[in-house]
Image (cartoon, rainbow over all chains, first blue to last red; front, side, top):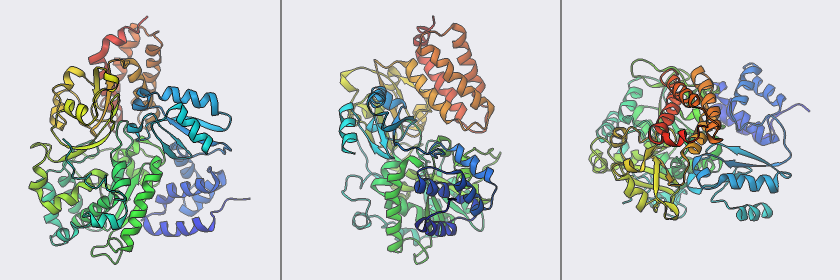
Length: 147
Length: 410
């Protein structure tokens, strides 16, 4: 089935169209809505966006591949992102990553990411985008077993 | 030691909701704002010498004037793409006092003659930008925003998607236009930025959040804090090997060591201080003996061969490996280079790979020379300051801690 936005997203798009002076500015918001709707950005979603903003598919693909948070492939796993940048590393992010890899890699996609702006809560990770800070291996076990 | 201007309401429960915000002074500066002509507001900001709080430290009033001098459609873009390692202050404003930011946006738009503002928030801050969006919705309901407001302003949150370079203002605007976040060439003479060809003011979240205090209390009240050249306060952030990492507002010019000990709670586990990266990962590291004399203002840190940057300090204790720390940062630069300029794209990749050899203690003397040479090549030969910043980071580590790198040579 070819991609289209659901009713809720179509009304969001209508509102957004009034907020920008040029349709091109809708590319990032439309990519986010497509990803939220399907959990990743399908190729036909990019085709659909190119029609809305009246630009070639290449422009959409170029943007979608530049930004690290856009997912172009489907995953059935929940996503954990572990911050690996300096304040987190100084506070033990390597141990956290190892604990996750050793115990949860079958059920979760575990990624290393650059600074998430949570250095006072180092080490930290996100679970499905939600911040979890001041991590210890025990805390990870508790959080993941409760979720 | 804490001085609370921007962070005054941070500790108040539910400070992000409009009823609590109104009870605690939010939107109270608007009466003073609208009682003055736009140029008078710009003059107050100039007199206050408010400096941009996103890292550059340029005088805000001058930028406002540049945007104001143009006729026709104009935009205000608030830079909330806070991605500099060690920096996490704007997140506090977005989640704890978004109405302060909205109040500042209204005043700034009025001053420069804009009716449209975008808050460009880094993609990772979804839950914090949701809080800000709720506050914007409330502000529309109370007619502080929208066509029924005393001065019409519309605010739209625009979410980035994970690219550090989009914190650079021209890359941010490219991204806001729906393109890859590639920085633009800089003009020779001062001019505003342009969004879809229209003059645009780009200011950091904390800069805009400082505006209501200045308008309400006057330029002199703001200048009563801080130093002559760096007036006012900053939401300094502290992290790394300290006991109480966090965001604590303080006057410019306070002693860095006192800040670390009193607000940061001192070095963790009773260890000795080895070094501090003073203002986000892009600012050159300074060793402990220099930290003793450092003060938290633009001029003091420049005098020590570093920079205040965003004010986000990363503290390293005596056990920290400088080789490993530099490796960590250079991997960041390699990952985040936008790839537009060859010296940056290739250079950051090269130095990242060389650092693997140092970490694994299989580097040669030639590797050290290549590291220095590539660093030199990256500096001053690119469109934006990303590569020069990486170069400054390398040079800082080698200047103060070269012996640790020599120990890794086989």
